[in-house]
Length: 190
Image (cartoon, rainbow, N blue to C red):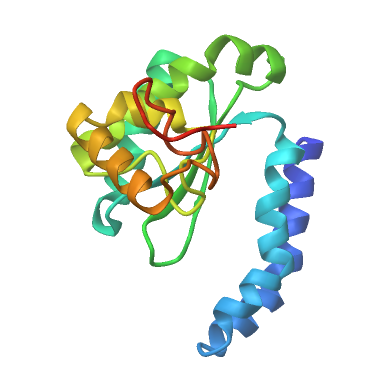
């Protein structure tokens, strides 16, 4: 039996057939077509139709993506039975939007509040044996700054700070983004 959500999803996919077929027959244009297409908007909008989710913008070497997804999906199902996984990526660049939603019928906001950190830890830790990164095309910014500090060695962080100080000695460019200010840093952050 199909529920209303399933019918909406099937309807959206059926509406994309001709647009996707056209794009695939025109290889020189297909990236541009897909970026502007109903298909791209449908993928982006599917998260809001389905509800809140723990979002991840990760990267993995292309040959290892399928195995990462298989292993990580299984680990998440074991840790949080019934979670829904809404994954999509970029063709050919190794970036993956790996999104985890509450089990059907669960309160999405409550799921996020109670499980976001555990889900992030599981996903980011699962990336390590696959030589993946917890950050892809959307970068580190302020949201992943603390994660960067947890995942990089003190030597790597000192090197990053030194490079930042060389290009921005007064600390004016994006203060507090990517790198937390060092307590002993000479840069002045407003």
